[in-house]
Length: 289
Length: 289
Image 1 (cartoon, rainbow over the protein chains, first blue to last red):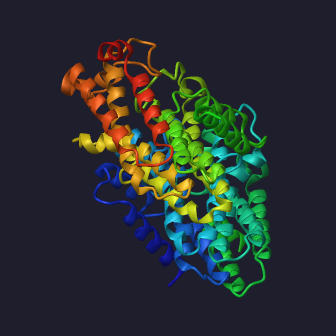
Image 2 (cartoon, chains in turn green, orange):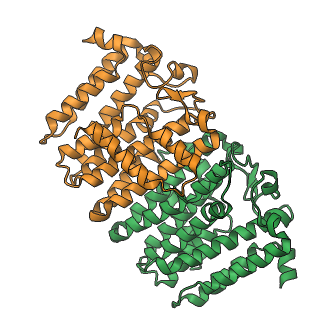
Image 3 (cartoon, rainbow over the protein chains, first blue to last red):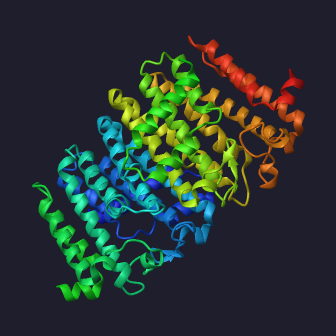
């Protein structure tokens, strides 16, 4: 089974289990709308790819880890899209959750997905109880205080933004959680996998900045020009288009080099390069090829 | 150490650990503002009282369980107060979080507290790893889908409200989590403790409805008359003041009767009665005495 098929199957199975008939129908519908169809599923795919590269000795736990990472990513999207943040009309090519279900259910959808992420880990860890605490803590580190995605988003409310911390928290932290959790789920040490997560997170942020600044409408999965409109730091504003493109290429190279020596290393390298190509705005990818 | 002193000490210690200097300062401040000073701390006190009644064999884990329950309660308050829900100006006798810190940080404060709740459990369970999964799952059940407090709040967005499910989810579920988690943290079976949580949750809801309908401004820890203003189900509207008061008294009696036979049973019975008295609007408590 390919990693991307496996990600969708895990999300479908674990969300289905959580949503019994007792769930308020509109909440159940809003949560499902938020999770399906997905974007590129970069983070959970990365988590599973690392687990597979580490031997994937407990596949159910790896599935739960990947789903947990994606549920939290979706939670961050639905909350970031709220009127008090980006006030986004669309996400992943369709109207944002609050535009369809209203603000109250959008807030609750995010809350429910945060809880679900931890719940699926608790549920899947029964046969490997000693792996649960490191999984929970790694996920919390990627999402909460002091430097997970919630903290990253909170930097936008500060009078002075620490740009490095902002990007590392808002984007990098969940990538690091994804690689580390893939390793932990498979019974491997997470430490050698942190650098890959860091470099990929930074590469993804660079690609996102490029996409925001120079792609044509409809190419990515969200509206363009948001960073300039919301006065947010953007690498293109700092380095120019070519500078940002070179930074992206450097980071992808560093990510590939950061992959630890293991049986699945070649597959992971191929995956990272393919993702990088996919994330680069098309006319730039052609000119850089 | 009294249970209430122990609750404050646990909250202070566990929040302090999570908030390193790297946390964005306004987020750190908003989270602290949300958690301190507290209301009655009913849920974490209940959790610790059950742990103590069960022998309190792993006090650090019981502290974490109690703090996790309170962090989630605080998260639910800050999100419920948002303009898209209750639009509450005040909470616990001071301006609500979004009135002081703005909506974005209020949303993020709730998110950060949900994550922190699971994180402190993961951190405290290192010496008792086999208790972590049941603690995580019990907490998630009290908060998430299909019938935790998030689901309870979501019932307000449904065209037709199932009032029993609404109250059981919005209030009862976290009380049940509190009693069960106290038992699990102490190495005891949670099953005998569910009924106490259910009855106390229902009693607390009845007291809350009475307080909302008939107390004088300033007596409780939130504005009065909200249920009528927001067209929410309220027991006083259904049964009248005397009917609601009798229901409260019945539920307190049932809660006392539901306390399992154990060494600390008498202390727990006293605590439940004292809480019930405290939660009853003062002029009604006098007339009922």
